[in-house]
Length: 135
Image 1 (cartoon, helix red, strand yellow):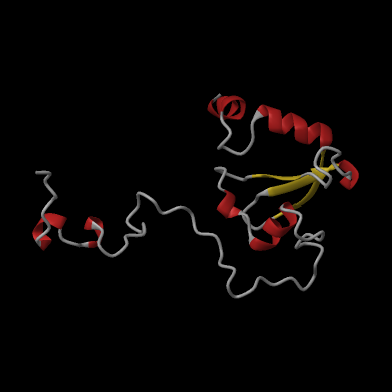
Image 2 (cartoon, one colour):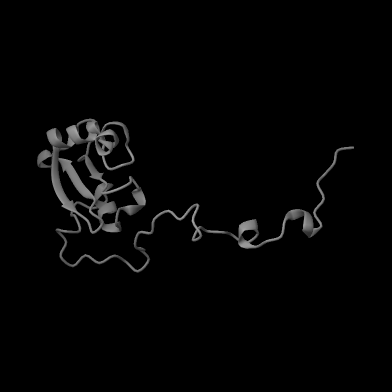
């Protein structure tokens, strides 16, 4: 029952009913990545008249996190390349293309820049700071 409610009312847990219906009626499965995300395009690779290019989309395996799309699939989704990573036999990501890491906000692994209280910096008052006071 919980999964059914997620399916009907949430967009961040995979797909909604509307996305499911659109995919069933208009979509053509293209491939799946190592995270279990499934990629689709318009049936037969038809060009969308309103957009002027092929409509492509992803159904996430878990929470909808755009950073979970690998670099090769990202290029295909955004019409930068016409060939999926599955159709390109010698595809290798560049060294600067890093693998996905989930959002670390709110965890001990979150980014804490220098000067942040959470990074161990002292409060502004202890550094001799005095707030401006109008006359």
